[in-house]
Length: 68
Image (cartoon, rainbow, N blue to C red):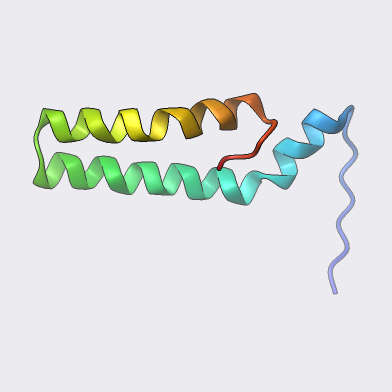
């Protein structure tokens, strides 16, 4: 068993650490979608990927609701 203690200044800072796996998943999904759009699509495909991920990126930046 692994026990991990993280000291944080406030609840918002703690959520950053607790949501780290979700942030990584969001970045990984975005990277793969951009790569596929560049490789198999056109500029419109790339723009659609950015628009699709933008709300999730904004939520992740707020650190409140997690990455998704």
